[in-house]
Each structure stands twice: as C-alpha cells, then as structure tokens.
Amino acid sequence: MDFSLGREEELFRESLRDFLSKRLSPIWESIDEEGKIPTELIRDFGSQGLFGIPIPEEYGGQGATFTMAAIAVEEIAYHDPSMATAVLTLLNNAWPYVLYLHANEEVKGEVLPKVAAGRGFFGIASTEPQGGSDVAAFKTSALREGDKYKVYGEKIYVSGIREAMEQLELGGWLLIARTGSMEERHKGLSALALIGNSNGVHIEGLKYSSLNTIGRHGISTGILTLEGAEVPRSHLVGGEGKGFYVAMEGFNVARPLVAAANIGAARWALEQAVQWSRNRVLFEKPIAAFQGVSFPLAEVSVEIEAASLLIYKAAWLADRIYVKKEPGLKPIDLAYYAAAAKMKAVETAFKAFEVAMKTLGGLSYIKETKLYRGLLGMMSYMVGAEGAHNIMKYIVARELIGKEYVK
Ligand SMILES: Cc1cc2nc3c(=O)[nH]c(=O)nc-3n(C[C@H](O)[C@H](O)[C@H](O)COP(=O)(O)OP(=O)(O)OC[C@H]3O[C@@H](n4cnc5c(N)ncnc54)[C@H](O)[C@@H]3O)c2cc1C
Image (cartoon, rainbow, N blue to C red; front, side):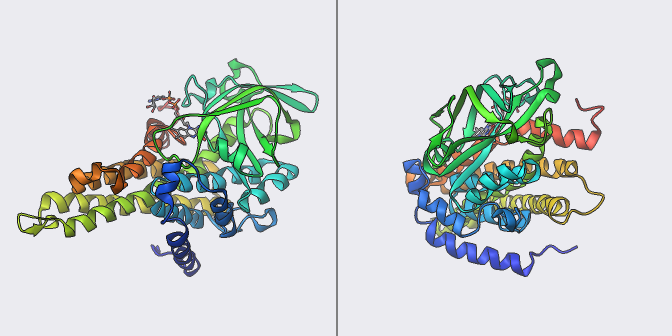
C-alpha cells in the first residue's frame, strides 16, 4: 500500500502547476465571461501534452497513464474552477481513448494525433431529447447503404459543438445510433466515429446549434441534428450491435476524470473560504475562531481527501486494466469505482461551494468573488453530464447487490 504519487507524477504536477498558474489562472474568468476557450490555449494544452495522455505515442498520444490524466484534469479545474477547460481536457482524453481501443487504424490515424496536438476535438454524442439515462431507448438510426451509414436523429446537450465544428481543424464525436430494431433495445445500438469537421469541411446532413447554458460557458453545449449524414462503414467503432458496451466503457474511463475535475474546483473553493476565515474579523476575532465556521471547512477538507482517494483508486485501477493490462482484470471491473468516484466527487464539490459561499457571506453573492462560476460549472455534473447522479447510484447498487436484484 502506497498513498504517494511517483516521482514522475510529482514532477508532472509541479510543471503543470507552473504552466497553469501563468497561462490559465489569469484568464479563466474572462473565458467564462466571454464564453470561449481561445484556440491558442487549446493548442498550448496540446503542446503541453494534456490531451490523449493514456494513448500510446505511436498514435500521437503521451503514452502515459489515467493517473496522469486525472492529475492534469484536477489541476486544470483548480486553475479554472468554471471547469470549461477541464471538461475539454477530460473529453479529449477519455473519448479518443475509446477510439484507440476499438476503432480501425484509418480512424485512429485521422483523429488521435490531431486531438493530442490540440488541433482536434473528439467527444461523445449519446443523449437524446426524450431522455439521456435510458440509453437502450435511443432512436437515432444509422441505416446501412453499401459501404456507408445514413444517420437520422437528434443528439442534445452535446459538449464541444463550436470547438469541434468551428474552432479546430478536426472535430467529431462517438455517436451512438441504432443499426438494429427498437425491440433489440441496447443490443441494437452501434457506435460510429462521426467526424463533423475535417479541415474546415463540414459533413453534409449535419446541422448544429448551441444551447444557452447557465455555467462553464467556455466550452459550448449544443444540439446535433442528423438528416441523412453519411458515415463510412469503416467508422464503425467496436462492431455492429456493440455500441452500448463501447459507450459504457467510455463512460467508465471518463468518470474518474470527471471526478478529478470536480475535486480540483472544490479545492479552489475551499482555499477561498479558508483564506477568508483567517482574514474576516468579527466580534474581535477572525471568524475561523468560531466552530460554526471552522467545522464545515474541516468537514469539506475531509470530504475532498476521501473523494481524492476514490478518484485515484479508480484511475489506478484503469491503469492496471488498460495500461498494464494485468491478467485477471476486465474493463467492467472499473464500473463500480468510476461511478463511485463521480458520485462522491460531485457531492463533495457541491458541498465545498455551498460552504465556501456561506463562509464569505454576502460577498460571495457579488460577481467579483467568482465562486458562483465554479458552482454553476460543477452543477453540470450534478444534473447529468457524463451520467445522471441517480445513475451513478444505480451502478454502485448493481455492483454491490447484484444485477439479478438491481434492474
Ligand atoms: C452541461 C452538460 C453537458 C453535457 N454533455 C454531453 C455530451 O457531451 N454528450 C452527451 O451525449 N450528453 C451530454 N450531456 C447529457 C447528459 O449525459 C445527460 O444530461 C444525462 O445522461 C441525463 O439525461 P437527461 O438530462 O435527459 O435526464 P433524464 O435521463 O431525463 O433524467 C432525469 C432525472 O431522472 C433521473 N432518473 C432517470 N432514470 C432513472 C432511474 N432509472 N432511476 C432513478 N432515477 C432516474 C435522473 O437521475 C435525473 O435526475 C450533458 C449534459 C449537461 C448538463
């Protein structure tokens, strides 16, 4: 049992802190205010090796680990607690990794090096307007015509629309679509690498629009409308009828990183509160002297510590499964820890922002304090992004009690 990071990981964290404190901290508020991550910043993240971290170097990735990816995402969210840049980073680590696992060489060669270099974006297009949690009921259809699929349907709350379609050289998503019948439920779903934008050329039959979100404004969230968009059959990821399993594996590798983003932002919120509790003097004492102020801070600190242990355990397990390929371990073994890490981290981040805002009192309700930007950013994960909160509880319950009991 060893709770410390290795030397390489510590050095990575230190150099990242140095980079982010100069490059991200000074501009995160304006990114949130203006609603756009500058393209040069995305390029700089690429040059810094922050995308495709667990993807082998032969595909342009960093050839590192999920632990390193979690460190990167946590630090980015600490330096940009609105979480927009952390979300872009975690998507550009998790979903390209699914391509590395299951796509053919042509797709990997087209997408992975561009994403890793900060010149591309690859996310997930799963959710449909009639409900994101019931994946087996998705209606978007992919009809086979020769060596192509023609896709019809609508995907909603999709992250990275503008970045993929307008800002970067290449943009796409892992699209979950039905190649079988509705009666086949989840077994009728397939995953396709939908490349919406390649060097400024947009795929025909794909319309996109942005939604007016309440937080994490730097990264866009929107709607993809597919009206006969043609996707080459070679872009099938994991085989026909395997889309549900490919998507679930993607969520499992993404969730420890989502959790890391929440904890990075939570650490920042706690620091604001600790600082204020030392400086604010009332009744002739710093307010930290009152247990009504210091105990909630202590509780949040412990929650953050506990959530971090869960996150890094999930990342360590992902490394054992995917990077070290330890015999006896299967991808499904990650499901419990990935869902548990997201569940715990989101609850902890919510509490951290609540306690921080109460500690600052009326000041926290003034825009300049910035805490609200973090609260609204993390709320995206409380309400559903990368899986609704109840779905995390369902997965943990299923793994704990058994599939035959928890339906
Ligand atoms: C900012 C943001 C970004 C997003 N980015 C993406 C993206 O890039 N790609 C993408 O595909 N999706 C994305 N999503 C969508 C996200 O995956 C969905 O919000 C999520 O899957 C939940 O779907 P829903 O919002 O339709 O809620 P619903 O599925 O309609 O759920 C509504 C409520 O019912 C509860 N519920 C549902 N089923 C059960 C059940 N069986 N038991 C108990 N409770 C249940 C849920 O917990 C939730 O509280 C994003 C969402 C947000 C907010």
